[in-house]
Length: 379
Length: 249
Ligand SMILES: Nc1ncnc2c1ncn2[C@@H]1O[C@H](COP(=O)(O)OP(=O)(O)OP(=O)(O)O)[C@@H](O)[C@H]1O
Ligand SMILES: [Mg+2]
Image (cartoon, rainbow over the protein chains, first blue to last red):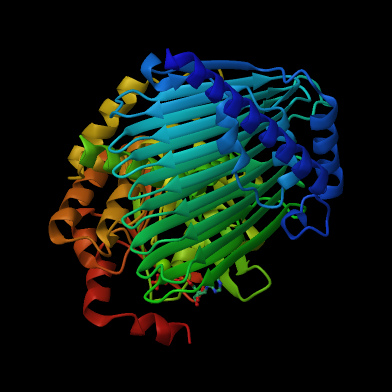
C-alpha cells in the first residue's frame, strides 16, 4: 500500500534531479569557452581551427550517429541510463570543458560495464562512425574484479568521434584498457578526427591504459588519472606513428591524492612528414601523499625535418619521500641501427619501418608485460 | 670471379683520410686474413665496402664478381652476396632477432614469393644449436643486452642464415670464449666452399690456427703493406708489427 506513494516520491525526486542536472549542464555550456591558443592546454596543434570545428560540429549535429558493438559477458553490460549522466557530469577535462559540456548534452550512447569478477576473455567494444558520434564508456570495477578491455574506434571519411571514458577501480581490481583509434580515409579530402577524454579513479587497484592512434587527421587525448588510495598502480602508455600532416595532441595528468602508490607513464611517437605530436603531461603529488612513486617519459623519433614535436612534461610535488622523474627526448632514427639492418639486405623502407616499430615496441610490451603480471597475481 | 679492390681511398666524411690506396684481390673460394696494428684502417675498409654512411670514397674502385660495389646501395650490396660481421654489432631495440632475419631473407625472394616460415624457423633453430645459442634468442631484440660474445655469435648466425658469397669477419674472435671460438671457427670452416670467400680480420693467431687462411695481409696506415702465406702469422706473433713500421715510417 505504501509502495505507490514511495514510487511517486522517487519519480519526483528523479525528475527533479534530472531537471537540476540539465540546468547545470546548460549553465556549464554557456560558461565554458571554445578553447583557443590562449588556453594553456590548447596552445599547440592549431587549436583555432580544430577546436572551433569540433565545437561547431558538436553543436550543429543532432544525430549522434554511430555503431556500437560489444563482445562481453551479458552480466557485465548495463544499458546506458539517464542516471549515469551523473558520472559524466563529474568528468574532468584538460582544457576542454566546453567539449565535455557538449558531450554531456548529447549523453545517452555508449557502453556501461560493471565488472565484479575475474574475466578471462577480453571485452571488446567497437565504436564506428562516419558522422559525429559522442559515445561514453563507463567502466566500474568492483573489489577484486579483473578484466582486459579493448576499445576500438573507427572513424570513416570526415567523421568525428568524441568519446569519454569513466573508469573506476575498487580495492584489488585489475583493469587493462587498450584504446585503438583509427581513421579510414577513402579519398584524399577525408579528414577523420577523434578525441578522447578519459578519467581514471583507482583505489588500492591496478589500472593500465595503452592508447594507439592511426590514420587520423587530428586526434586529441586527455587522460586524467587519479590515485585515491594507497597501494594503487596506474600505468599509462601510448605508441603512435604519424605522417603527412597528421596532428596528435596528448594531455595527461597523474594525480596522486594518496601516498604509497605508483604511477608510470610512457608515451612514444614516431613522427614523419610534416606531422605534429604534442605531449603535455603533469604529475601532481598532493600534500600528504607521501611515499609516492611517479614517472613520466615522452620519447619521440623524428623521421623528417618538417615534423614537429612539442613535449612539455611537468611536475608539481607537495609531499615528502617522493620518487619522481619526468623526461622528454626527441631524436632522429639511429643511423647505426638503420645501417645494421640495411647491411643485411633489408630494403631502406622496410628497415626504417622495423626500427620505428622497434622504437615503439617497449611501450606496448611494458603494457602487455604488466597486463600479464597483473593477471598472474590475480589467478 | 673475385673481390677486387683497386687503389681505394676513403675518408671520414669531412674528416681525415683513412684508406690511402688499398689494393686487394680475393679470388672465389679463398680465405684471406688481414692483420695490422690498432687504428690502421681494417674496420674502415670493411665498412667502406658495405657502404657505411660515415665514410666517403675519394678514389679507386671495388668490384665483386665484376660488379661495381660502389654503384650499389648498402642493402643491394648485401643481397648481391656481401656480408660483414661487425667488430661492434649494433643493438636494435624492439626488433626481434627472428623478425630481423625473416625480413633479411624475405628481401632476397622475388616480390610475390612469401618466405616459408616453417622452414625458416627450422633452419634458424638448427643454426643456433650449431652455434650453441639458446633458442630464447630468437624472440629477443637484436643484440639488445647481449654479452660481447653473444653479439659476435649472433652476427655469425646471420652469416650462416644469409649464405653470402663474400664474408668479412671483423675481429669476430675478440670476446669469444675458447669454446665459442672453436664453435665459430668450425662454423666458418664448414661454410668454406668454392663459391665463397672469406676476409678474416683478426689480431690473434688462435683464430687463424683454426681457420687456415690461404693468404695473409698486413694493413698499415691505410695501405696493404705486406702479403704472404700463413708463415706471416707466426712471424707477427713473434715479432709484432715493428717490421712494417720500420719499412713504412
Ligand atoms: N667514423 C669515424 N670518425 C672518426 N675517426 C674514425 C672513424 N672511423 C675510423 N676512424 C679513425 O680511423 C682510424 C682507423 O680506424 P679503424 O677502426 O678502421 O681501425 P682498425 O684497424 O679497425 O683498428 P682496431 O684494430 O683497433 O679495430 C682510427 O684512427 C680511427 O680513429
Ligand atoms: Mg677494427
